[in-house]
Structures are given as structure tokens and as C-alpha cells.
Image 1 (cartoon, rainbow, N blue to C red):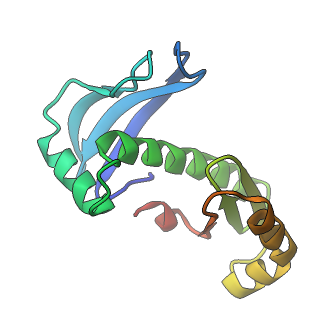
Image 2: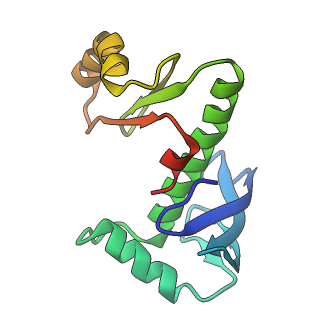
Length: 154
């Protein structure tokens, strides 16, 4: 199960919002203890929590450092994406692949399955895709390599 510093989302569901076409909600756990229900706001505002978020806010502040714009809402959005990658990784493993490379920026992403877990070989095999992505992107490009379910625990 994907987690960031001990925070997990279980029973992750989507629903239609007014500002964004897809919003998420689920049950938040911290260090295996159930905290309660969380949902993104239907109008695009701050997330809603039915529990005290003091501990999670502290973790989010430590996770992002001095970034004044990132908060618990951002951390949970990042965790949602990590959960979605984990689901995709499961499907890729079922198809007989061994790993998954994700190349992304703020606007698009490219998911590439691979039959090897060797990082150097995967990067070498996808050099053209990486260079193309770097050339076309106007924002910071990030790459993630998932070879095991442990890779989803940050």
C-alpha cells in the first residue's frame, strides 16, 4: 500500500466535482492507525477532514521543508498519485513486466513498462523518450522507477 511517511489512504474513491472533473476521498491511516475520513472539496477549496490534522500537518511541513505553498492537501494529492501508480504497477506486473518507469512534468506523464529491473538498462533503453520529454517540457521533469511494491513507501 502506497504511503508517505506513514500516511496511507485506503478505500480511495473518485467523485465528480464542480471545479475539477475528478476528485478523491478515502480513509486516512497514520502508522496503521485509522484517523478518519478525508475528501477533496467539490468546489476546489481546501480538503475536508473529520479528524484532527495537527500531526499530519506537522509531517507535511517536514516533508516539504520551507515550501510555504505546499501543505497537507498537497501531500495527500501526491499520495493519491502514488496510489494510482501502484494500481498501474500491479496491472503491469500481471502483464508479465518487471518494472515501470514514469516520466512526468506538471502537465503530462509517460508510463513505460519494462521486462528488466536494472536501472541503467531501463534508462538506456528509454534515452530517446527522456530526451524528448526534457526538450518538450516547460516545467521540471521528474522520473520514478518502480521495481517493487516497497518503492511506493516514501
